Length: 235
Image (cartoon, rainbow, N blue to C red; front, side, top):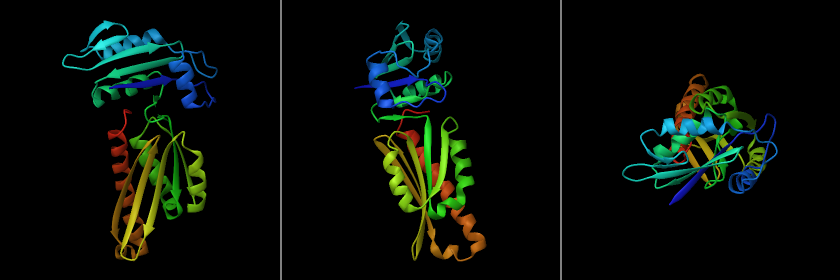
């Protein structure tokens, strides 16, 4: 089975359709307005250094003893790694390597580019905006983060328009006996959700309730981000 992972860098202030860039620039090898020219020779040298334990057939083809190989396809604006029978840990190395050149990962299998997170704090979760922002910045430091507080109705409308970016949602649901703080991430065709719960009776004291819910949200964020890393080739 082959998996291709693609990289490019947009010029400052330019927003492009990721799927179109993939088809036109990465697959069609067409010059694309709005993309930077990449230092291809430096990238190939970095690839050789990162994969120095692999057998290089030439600067664009590598094989690993025991199985696994990849091919590098380049244009002046894009780099594409076609991976064959590679393990996830090895494939994640492309993401961290290309970050040095300002190029976020685009995974066409998922239809997601790992550059930005649109975050929604729904209803009561908005009270924890600073803590949520700090947690996401710590766990996903290379992602550009935009958080906003919304009502449930606003969220249902806004979420329909954001299929092109990584999405994070947090919500708190209080029921009679159990209260849940849930973090959810959508990354292209895949997703992860992690609820953490406590007995609603633990929230009877307003002075301690805020701390209890903050800790639940923190745990749910850490767990959903862990799932995100396990289900992607982003590192």
